[in-house]
Every structure is written in C-alpha cells, then in structure tokens.
Image (cartoon, rainbow, N blue to C red):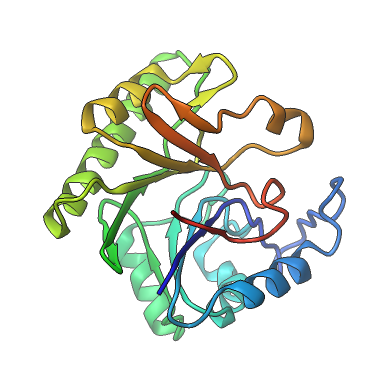
Length: 230
C-alpha cells in the first residue's frame, strides 16, 4: 500500500466551470484519470488537498464524486477555498454513504493511519491577510490543525505528515501563526496546494524551510499526476 497526494483538481463535470480555458489545463480531466490509473492501485490511498469540485452545493457534487470514486484507491478529501459545497462532517459522510461513494472519506478534525504512516491536516489560510476576520479564521484553523495532529498522535507515536490547502509560506511571506504552530508541533513534512501557474510556482517554497520539508502538490504543478508521499 502506498500513499499519494494531489491538490486542486477543480472538477466541474456537473457544473459549467471549465478549467480548460487556462494555459496548460487542456483535457486535464482525462490526463488526471490516465495518470492516476497508471500509478495508483486499489490498495493505495490518495490525499486530495482541497479545491476538489466547483459545485456550489453538496448535492451538485454527484458527477465529480462519481469520477473520483471510480478512480483506483481510497481517497481522503481536505477542504479548499473553492469547495463551496463543503458542509459538516456528518452531512458529507451521510452524502457519501447514501450515494455509495465508498472509496472516499474526509480529512477534517481527524486523522488516518496508512501503512504505519499517519496523516492529518486542515485548510489553512492566506499568508498575506491581516484583518480581524482573518485572525479569527487563522486561529480556528490552528485549532483544527492541532486537533487533527493530536488525533494522529493517538494512532501512532511517529510524527504525522501534515496536509494543508493554503501554503503557510510563499516567497518571503509567511502566515506566521500557522508556521509557528507547525514548528511548535514538531512537523517535519508538509504538503500544500492552492498555487497555480508557472510564475506563481517559481516563488513556491519547496524543500527544507525552518526545519520542515515542504512540497507543492497543485495538480498543474505535478502535471496532473498524484505524487508519492515519502
């Protein structure tokens, strides 16, 4: 069993929000499917770190979720900034169950153990926002990160792999509160998405930064291919 990760697949099979209009995104759904099926087996798990579907409501996710569910492996879904359909964990769990989407679970205030490796995470928040509302959101996201991290530690003594949607650092700008939380928790590996386009990718922080190994997994950065988590 292997663990893979990808973010920002931006499916719109049930809505009119084509991503093909953007440079490099032509035929991206078919490319994603082919790459996924080439790498991932039914014994593997894939974390999808946010921006999963353009649907506005949970019931509008059916076609996108059908596509995901049919792909090989188990999938752990993390909330992104464009996942407007996201509701409470119970509502999402009930929706997945009632529609037979049995290869999918959500990563939200919880954690999973996969072949001796534990994974946890939360959405995170913008690295360059400083308003009062932003501070409230950041504090809430830090609380969810710590809760998820704590759940992972209950499963194993090892240091969990952390997944975020937003990058906690970009170029030379940090979301200081989230970076401080990652360091305080002793995180050593963090995967994130959200960033798109060649110009943006050039300023993405990848590799070691303040003792944490960061990896960008936005699907246009990974060429629409799930990345093996090491």
